Image (tube, rainbow, N blue to C red; front, side, top):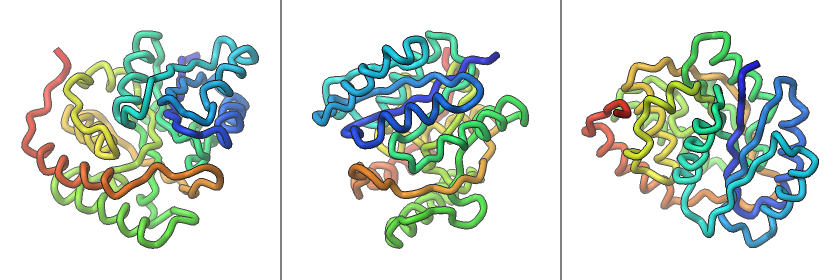
Length: 241
């Protein structure tokens, strides 16, 4: 059986973290979880540590000393997962906006259907978002259109954060050269994989706005991505040496 790990970055997710962990572990296929907690003052990490006794081989946590950014959390997780020998590495939010059942479909896209990077897409079949304010939907949808126009990448949901990487994608990308740390990180990783010749496939999902806890989204996150995309277009993308 292939080795699979779901990386879940957290900051103040005490309302969601135990439920999301138990849901992932209820799925067939022996998924592991790596939580990367950025010093949550609400005790998120303590909840995870408390569950490790129940799931000693499957639940892992890296605790960091503050809010260091989404991109750096995932890069930390990627390096850890490669070192531990995982075959498929997933990104997923802690707040149930990503349906854990869709992990099975993302895995199948890579393991059975030839994808190197499977993307849980909100926009490949129209707009599949529930309970988001209209302004946020418009911002997200047109951000992806802007990225496609600038970079020439055909992916409909360029800012998606629900993904499955095959191991060789993360082994090939020079993770040390990744520059964007907010939601621009999601764009940069997809574009880099695409430029290096990997097969990117979108898997339609329904994205549901969080029911518990507080969103970490801000206009500054999109601001970094806006300028970063233009710089990305003129950057030479190279494989890891």
